[in-house]
Length: 79
Image (cartoon, rainbow, N blue to C red; front, side, top):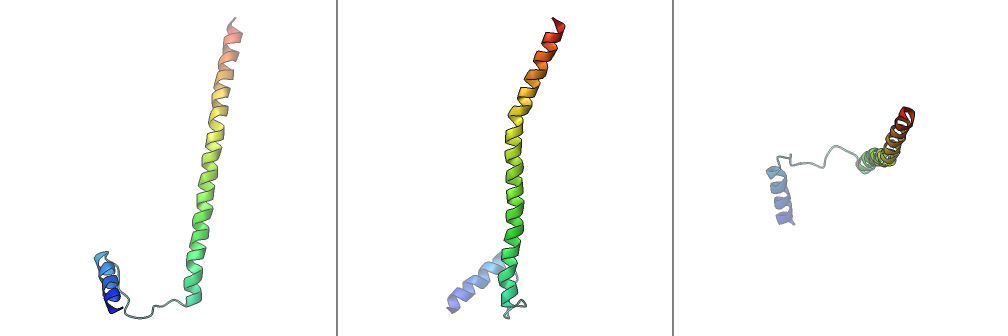
């Protein structure tokens, strides 16, 4: 187990992270809530971005049809 701890500390040091020498400062319930809350924010942003992308995919063909329709109106007015 000590070998695992040494490898873990070396990994953190290599990646320029602080190696804790104590139990930490957060209580367990806070440590459990924090990632859940952050994921909820991330997930909401991800869903919003996905909805915007879907809307853009839906709007593109409609805008193309609008351009075609405007082109036909201009063509009929000249005749």
